[in-house]
Length: 364
Image (cartoon, rainbow, N blue to C red; front, side, top):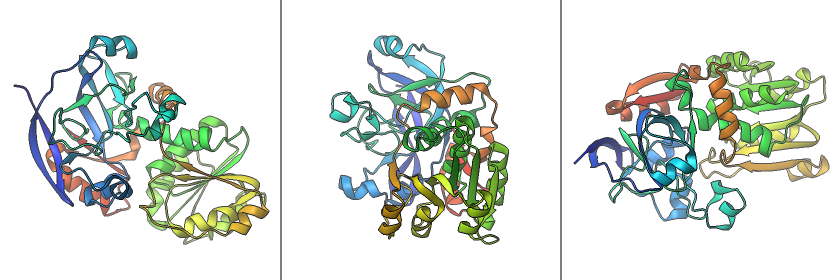
């Protein structure tokens, strides 16, 4: 019997290494040998057992395997899966987080990120039951029917490749939900990995101004935002946010605000940064279930649009093109790499929010 070593969340803030048998692969399934997996900004809440989904789903499915941002090589490919995805054993791919049922109204309309099964890699199913390998924090990942995979060029670094779905998120905030037009101005609140991916997408979309606002401890991230294409970066300690955007836009303000922090104060600020008829995208799952007060008169009087942004459905195709072109040093977002066995150490380090840390990745 073949075995996969896995880093398992056994309870709130508890991880341990376990071994599970590698399952047999059916005609519509695949087996991925994981090369690298990054710790997503939503993973700490899952690790702590406080993710917003836990309430809606009746609790966290302990024990489970975290990890939904991964790259690897296909070791086994079912015959039908090979035809459907145009892949074969040995191909290097990224697996999208969502597993679509293909039958509900949302999958039928192409919005598989809202699939009623709510099945995703990295925590929606317990690893206690076969086929066990539902997360990327392991040597192997079971790739179920309903998954989407994207081929990654062998010359792309593992650090960049595991962030493909993050780049897909940025494209979704800018292109799909934000509907940014060429020559418009975008303000990005928060320069973490989501914000940096949004900078990349905005640059690709032809934004005239890309303004990124962060804190003094975000200077490393703001420097990287500049490298990725931001035209203006500000720390709120040095320049009030409203004043910064007004000065950078000659008083016109922004066409689009992408709010990546989940902070109540940041959400409340969004309408002040927008011109009349502007749009705002609130990035999904960043607030941890918190509520935020909104000055509805500002949204009404300016006729503003606010939209939620959950995930990267149909945006990883564009992200794959950006990744394979290797024109952006996406790998610089991975600042720390640890072996899988030290994954809990990596999680706790990531949660400290140190200024020298953007993303932590694990190598099985």
